[in-house]
Length: 506
Image 1 (cartoon, rainbow, N blue to C red):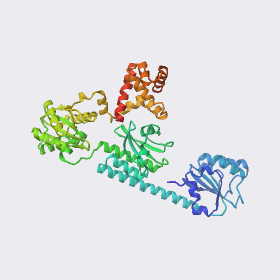
Image 2: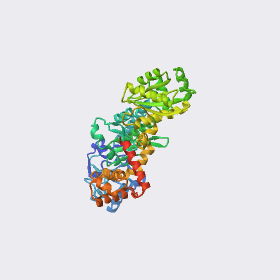
Image 3: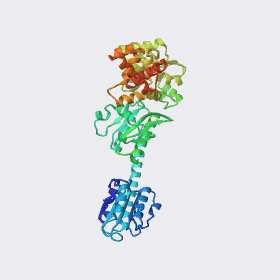
Image 4: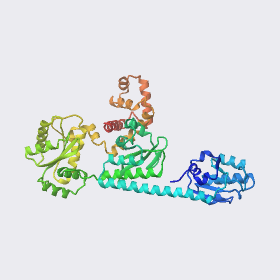
């Protein structure tokens, strides 16, 4: 929006004055908020900072002390530069005391060796500033319109991130609270380089505030979330924290948060109803009406949600037909399908799984709890989806929540911000330490210690190091985490956090 002193000196009305910078060159990249011409010596009292002051010098103090004070006052109030036209007060050059004082403050001091109307300089700079403001307003309006369109169209995270990268002309990354990448756009750069060791790199990016710029890494960062619950961060690699980038990243984050709250209806009537139950995108009463119209009444039925991997929606419909069992079936995503089965009993679920696995032996059939009302069906479907995600290898028969254990439970909850927050609270300092000291890898030391049942001797032997060396590493871990590694309670919490971290990284 605002030009720098260097850019102002390149304007034609200024060049006509034959400008020569005699001091404060290190301040030439300061922005010029306004131009002010004055011949009074106490002009600093009328300034607010960011002004380029123009003068002929006729009103400046005659003594050296007064000149030093004049320069000091300008620097203190935040003026970005002083341009003095020679010929009236000073014939060939400015006094050495002014040059020395301006240089000490880093205040650009410019001699204008030819007469030029100050009004021409003022008009040129102010036009430049106003044009910049108008351009920024137009850019903000374009950003608003683009992301409004994405929200209305129900764009997914990948589309939102791609649009942000295109508007910024810079790489953009969306990550969760555990620094796992959810979506990214490299903006023409190599994705492998952009995302190399991302978790460790991201942990070193620490901006201030909800939206902030980390000058060391060059990333502008904002939190992503809604209803008081953050679930991720959006990062944009830009050269500086300019207002246009801040507007862009915050608008993109708002669109992502909104998209997480309002999921678009997918194609297909049965799939639409399944998604409506899972995402609350349609009242349950309307789901019941539409399901009845499809010949699948949900009232006064025992219902169970089933999720199948891979996405065998068509096969599931055939099995339901062969069993003469009513249900809704549809693809959830490229890797999974969902079924809301009516007339559900344990025997029906087992028979469904057996028949489907005859069609595809690799199929994983996960089932939620059997419920009595359509309003409870969402919980059963969500539970089935979580169980399906927790199963890492094909399992014969139907898989229930009781079959997946603690590791499975944590895997199911890996997208839960509260679990990610727990992992960060318990292990964050140690992960950050390992990121700074990759040769030590103290997290692996902690893992061995806990897996050996807190037996230090056995853990040292397993690690192939001496007991004193192993004890020293444990002491360092305890100090970094602020935890007593001899405490059963503390170690239990750390062990659960490690299992959760494995689930997040899987």
